[in-house]
Image (cartoon, rainbow, N blue to C red; front, side, top):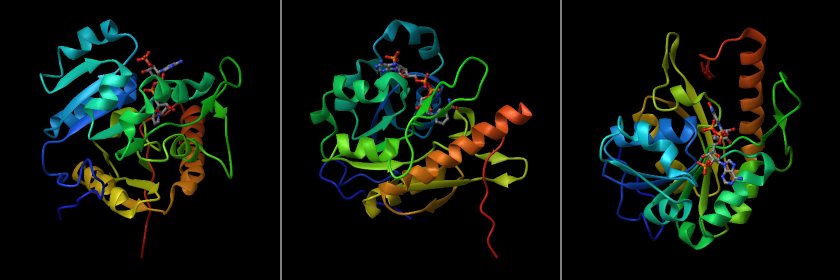
Length: 233
Ligand SMILES: NC(=O)c1ccc[n+]([C@@H]2O[C@H](COP(=O)([O-])OP(=O)(O)OC[C@H]3O[C@@H](n4cnc5c(N)ncnc54)[C@H](OP(=O)(O)O)[C@@H]3O)[C@@H](O)[C@H]2O)c1
């Protein structure tokens, strides 16, 4: 299946073609998605305030991955991924520093979870909750983009390789523009995800709550190699 995202920047693009993808965030998630996307043949630019910290990592990525400022990464991407810390308004600061114009008309994949600290040694807690969510807040911040919440319910290392011992895991996604959701669904399905679209970006609160459950299970069992699977009859 070839899925075309319905927007002016990526209209002629399909997931099967080489795309330019900008990633805001250079932590575990930004790095893993950068590797996965470049491994799938896409050109990636990671946006960071501190490019030097990625120089060693970049040696393993190959030439399809470049490093730039947040604004350069957002401008570069036909699609932009947001993979930044939430606490201290870091995600909103990162978006603003990348210049909101650079997101205009694009699919924006939101991987964030709105985690804030509950104190040393304790699992993080959500900084926003129903009816609000990080996904909805980002969509409000970027009204001329089509935000798709995805990949937030799994640890970074499995985002681009969801094949666990008990089978392929389920990736729930949501976003207001069906064509954009389909585009992200195809991207995820190509990595092996069983993708389930649960509707508009307002439903992000469900995906962020699911991430809290994933984190809770991890803390209780000291186990971080788990994922959700939707079983159907
Ligand atoms: N780690 C996981 O397994 C996982 C799984 C699912 C979802 N998530 C979510 O994905 C997001 C990224 O997670 P992560 O573990 O990769 O790393 P993280 O430590 O949560 O975030 C790292 C990134 O946040 C940016 N950042 C921090 N403070 C900032 C500020 N004040 N202004 C602008 N940018 C700032 C950093 O930018 P610089 O590069 O400029 O320093 C860095 O790139 C988070 O929202 C997390 O909850 C994580």
